Length: 379
Image 1: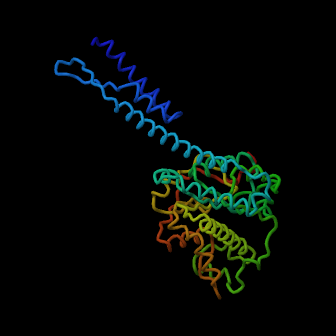
Image 2: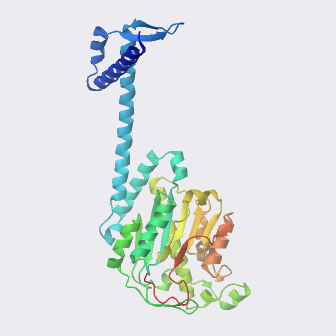
Image 3: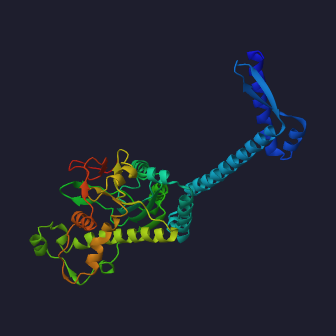
């Protein structure tokens, strides 16, 4: 048989097989019709490279049926994956329209469902690439309402860490007046309230939100049986700033807020039957000029990475170090002999968990208290 005719005949067989497979998807009984009217042709090579033809009435139908089953399975699998992905993306895009919606229990439960759906569909390789990360964003939202701040928080922190980042936010709006710190300069206030924060909150899209609009009474979180003194801080060779009775509630209040946020993370884990791969402490008034290191890399470091107390990344096996100070403080009776500053509290807490507390000065972030010459927090 001439070579051109052979190629044409092979092309015809391939086209016929594909056409039959498509017909089988629409009409399963077409296979019996093909078997009754056609015989499959098998091409073989002889020793002298001549082509011979042999006829097998059943082989054509069997191959067509097999191709049909394969195509149906692939289509079904793709449809199932697409539907799950569509549901997941719809849940991700569903963002409440008001602050009140974000603080509702219904919003948390929707996030729990999203986490459960994610666990059902994520592979082990995908989870290694994009680990499940909980970000505790806590503190005064001094500059968070500025677009250049919250857009960078979302892009360069939340998204940069992992596609599977869940934000737990505990924000304060009552301490946004002039920041009086001589070593950094005095900074003018920026109006921060529920209205000005809405765009920022919708950008970071927290799964849990607590908005503290008025200063809580000190007795609501202070341990009356535990005494901070400047004398003891000096004896322990620790900073004196928070040993001052006027400043002690600021320090204790910060650690209390972190403990509350961490408890919300653990409550979420129990509800969704999931364990996060890492927990992050971040501040809402931080500007991330460049993308953060990905969570995958930070987990592989096998240490706790931090930039002062502004950004702290802990793999889940070490993350209980966030609350070590609070547990010791609430059980204290008498003179306080523990850390007198957040930085020392976190360092010792993670050391107790067996982690090395690594100060990564290459972390590409800054806060508005950048220098004493800085006169405004507005970019």
